Length: 382
Ligand SMILES: *Cc1c(COP(=O)(O)O)cnc(C)c1O
View 1: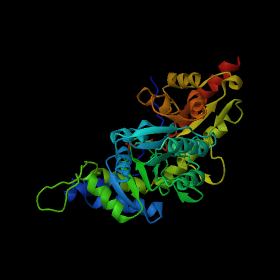
View 2: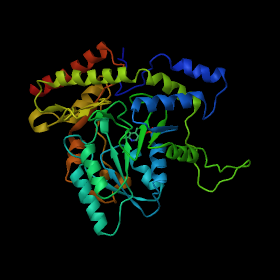
View 3: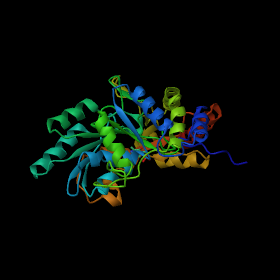
View 4: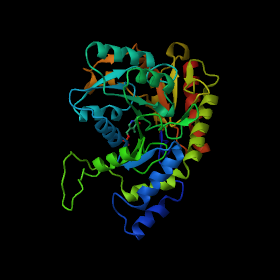
């Protein structure tokens, strides 16, 4: 019999989600507004705990797009963006007709390197262009080096869009990821730390900015009895049905963060005696990762095997593993844009692998994973 598939990250319901969804049916709030949308937003606001105003949207990508629109990013503008990320961080720059400039990662956090960022800004300023925004990312839940990145951004007065799609529940110096940007964004896609089946949120500094985001997300209707529009609108609001799932998921968020962190400890232990394999973890006590995904870096010269050996051996056992994000400056669609870096994200992509990390993995799943890994080690050392 074929073994069931072990996924990198799959949805994990807490139990009360259906109750909120049923309430929406019972009260006929089957619309992109209603008590679940308000309740979900309120629970995120209280979780983030930094007097922020949150608007629930149809996706994290929509949240990045609205952030750039409100920051007035237009055709011909330039936006700096972490190169090593999911393409959804960068695509909205192109939706606006603006030009991305990609920045390499640092080895400690795998996120944007403050030195390369400043190099990029100086280069663009010398060319007479002031970048309109900086998109920073917390990959795999690991907070980026926020203090240094903010210092650079503030020095040149460039606003930050914080892509916290993977980092709900992570903290940096005690403050929650999702509270650091001029705008921050969250994602509740099916594979994220909590899910609404699909959805996202924009985190704003005040209620006026939230109202602006909601206005744009609901087709930009002017105050009038008829439909009247003086700006381009979008259909980006979250539905009251999916928001019900989100309310239930917020009740188990911290528990699920704990379980993902346990998976990271499991991998730390599994690879502790295996030379040439490093399990990615926090560089210092300033950082607290939700460990959305646990990842390894393999030094082939020492380990005697590479990430493809591990990925394919796991695939053989019906266990999903995936190379790290392929940097944007290496992507066919983005390859002609400027890039500032010195090879860090290239080497992470070459040597790195994401491993099954879900909060719902069982003891049996763990046994299958460790058996498959041990098998590779045995083969390589024969
Ligand atoms: C998932 C993700 C997004 C996009 O979120 P969606 O809700 O899927 O649109 C953006 N950035 C990063 C880093 C992500 O992982």
